[in-house]
Length: 243
Image (cartoon, one colour):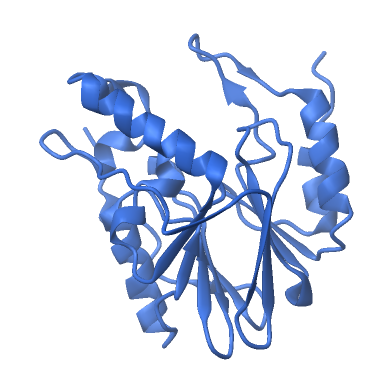
């Protein structure tokens, strides 16, 4: 029986003077949605799993008197971070690699009528967002970039850049230097194979760790956890070898 998504968090949390986030919702695997408030523009990090997730986010922004985002950027192509993109307000932003992967996902789902039924059976949270009779609208972003892109929101800059990561090859980090915050998406996490076995490419993780440590941040926001400080993130950047 699908979990009621109306139990999801309804309030944003203020992380710094200009950075907020809607917490993740573990029962249905909804990730954090980030938000940066500039003097002229605002920017959201990730588009969420579905129209319902986006609506949840916007209600939370409204409750704090925060404007809806001028831009929404993606950290990677996975459904729980990207499938709400069709209904966000403002302009959407993703790497060229992310857009290519979203286009391929749309192509595969169009030629296989059982595609979404398989997602409901095999992917935690998908049936909660897309019950039988509903399907996602997969779109590509309005703006795309190759490797890096910087936004001046007025009083605060946001820097997007692609990074080697063990989770996906299109991982994008979202760095807010003045606030000493970085949104990592799911970049630190490994992947599960078709048999459900989890593994982490340690070489890619080492490259990512060096990149993240070089950012001089105070807060590190991952997709499916609460933001960590510089001490807390080290456990994920340098996990203990399994015995």
